Length: 124
Image 1 (spheres, rainbow, N blue to C red):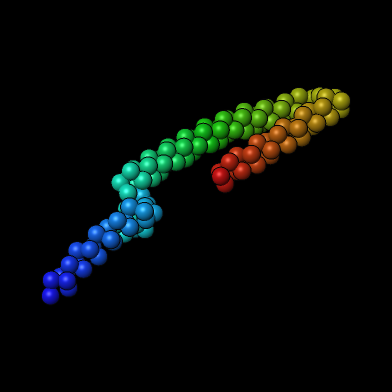
Image 2 (image 1 turned 180 degrees about the horizontal axis):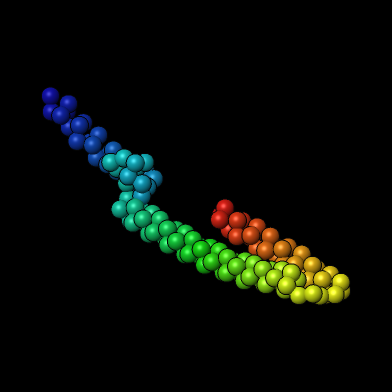
């Protein structure tokens, strides 16, 4: 009878001696009761916070770049409008009209490229 009662604590000690050798995790959903590590959990949380801060800074940088591009687009559109008004209001020679048309095409191309760049940033 005494022998039968001694095996239970021995089994418990044997199982507890195996527990420290098991892999631990910082994720409470994956570790279970004995596999969870507070230190790993704190590391996982710190890593998640760092990733979040990085993403926030990236988003802020993208928004700043988009604002810069939009300002450039607006400036080019003003130049284009001014150029077209000059072409329409003055009795210019054919050479000046051709130069204005060339400049207008270049401005339109620059506006298109800036718009594509801005759209590409919004997809990030």
